[in-house]
Image 1 (tube, rainbow, N blue to C red):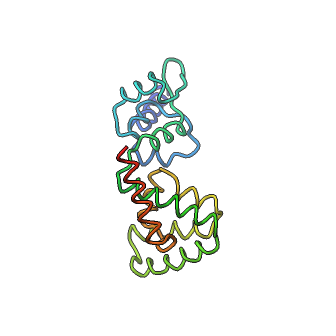
Image 2 (image 1 turned 120 degrees about the vertical axis):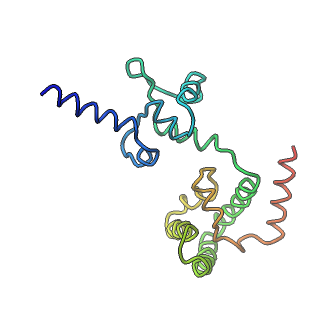
Image 3 (image 1 turned 90 degrees about the vertical axis):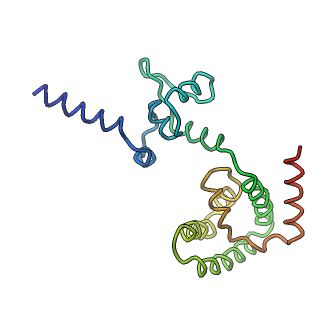
Length: 189
């Protein structure tokens, strides 16, 4: 009897240790991760996660002698440390201006976004672009704060959304060029 209990328990532990990144991403309601699980999500070594904890860059709690990392803290670290390319930075600057235009005229910007979305859907009826266009549709139909967050966030999701933006024409060509020039000057500093 004890053999079966140990065998089942050992199998559960083995399965937990070998969880894939996708499985870890899908786990709902689990707030604490081992340093090994955190390392897999960061695509780094466990020692790197331990070093992040020791330096204070990644908050942790201890369970006995083991460190546990809150998933929310790990996600915050991931979005904070993922470097953006020059194009992604420029896109973010433009998106901030679009967000400003949206705040001034939400109905007008939504209407233009929906028109552009329809055109983009005809050009990209399926595939990865269609996935992001579906997300823009939900954002355009949803609350303003979520749309503004998607436009101005530095997360990977928002970066992908901005690459498939339905907001062409919200800014004049002159305003867009002015933003690009300001971004270039800021990078030179």
